Length: 439
Image (cartoon, rainbow, N blue to C red; front, top):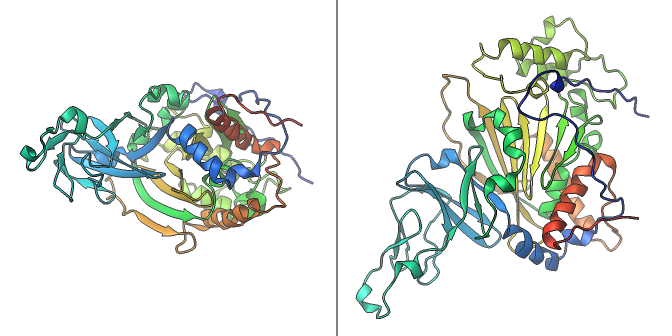
């Protein structure tokens, strides 16, 4: 039996730009969420038509587009998209396809160029995808008008240190799509963070299984028992908004699932050390650590080169964990952010691409590290860290189970409310009217 310990929260004791109050839980019913949506090719196609081609998508880190001529190639489903910074310092997005015979015009994952030249017949485009040169133009009696043959542009905008794009020419403005996200997350100043890890893993599961895996803490006791010695996995605040959602996970404490909250575990000691608090000379108990780390960072942050003035006390220790619909998961701490971008496979609902990026806050006057190389591999070929390896080990088994004739669908509890909200939002796009799973 769990001995429930209420976590003390300090966010509301001070003025903060990031709202910390609890939102009312939506009534989304309690019945099964159909498992077919993870395995059906027909459902996958409908997702492409109704979701992926309608929403805003994170495309590139602004750090990869610092200078005019920089470009990044990103992929979603069967589409390849080029993101650029042009001579005016503006961001652009356009399809990676030559208007002549369909060859791609940008190769690799990115780089720097003055123009894009198709390797097939040397048709040439500028940084906005506009046609600027056609060899042997006189052999085209119909001409090569720029307005007809420039590459089709896509909506493009930036927020948070990332460049976003949409496959929907009529998409709403990015800020409108993001809703409350900028107001909640701008205080972290992601633009002050450097990319320190960049990985893509090919997983044998549906992309939604990955979203689900990181949308609840119910799995911590079974999948990550070592984390119970440094964070709370039961008393977790969940907030659902129009499209997006979050939970607030207290770090620097012992899980409610452990009866004695006063113990200072090895995991808790390591967490203290990561914030320059010496556990060997510490006089408090496990019940005091979280608050004392917050006080320590509030008092010493400036000397460490960090400005935490826009963050509340809880943000100095806790994981403010946001899900930006449809496929961005953000684990946010005061000095770092870990981002998961979940992308569907081109044709197989049982596979996906999982992009992991880690960013670290650079102290004032500190030297920015070189951009790490991008690595891509299949699940199991390399480690992505103990905790994420544990998560990844579940997903192929989940996908196999969802393909079983014996599986009825997802049976969701209160700790998994974000999953039900995610599927409700998905259905708002898929079926125009929200579906409620009621008994």
